[in-house]
Image 1: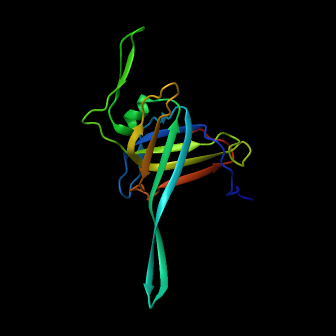
Image 2: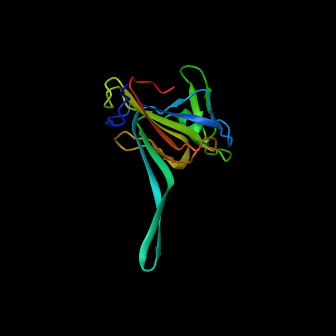
Image 3: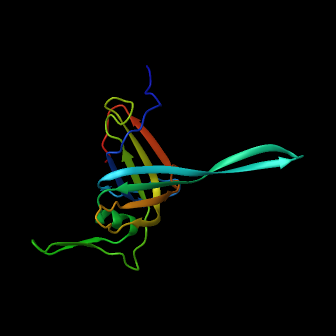
Length: 189
């Protein structure tokens, strides 16, 4: 039986969701909120990392070298603002009030608001991988905002919200990042 190819193209992104991490006990199982939050109008999910490299020198020569992963980061650009995503990433809640035609939805950053850990997952469209009808999922299992989200307005143009995160390994499993190739496309839960 031949296995699935481990090589694929990566074309486009069709969906991205974040899910709040509710528990991550050492030696246990990480748990996430029951509902994921859509990052609406996702345009880009870029992932990078850093590696530290140390060298050992002696007798006027290079004796050895050693490297380790120092960090994993990601950034996302999305076309539409989501108050629910802001609340999940920065804390707080969205409050709905009023009746038509005077309804309001308000998210407020307060002194007690604090960034929280969450999982972020992005996926290619079917055909966005080399697998006909398949897709590719990229998941950062435990991350937190590393800088305040880029929000606001732009004169005579659309404003593209964005955010950056730093990932850390799950305490329960040590997992930082996973890339999954699916023979048949699978929606992000």
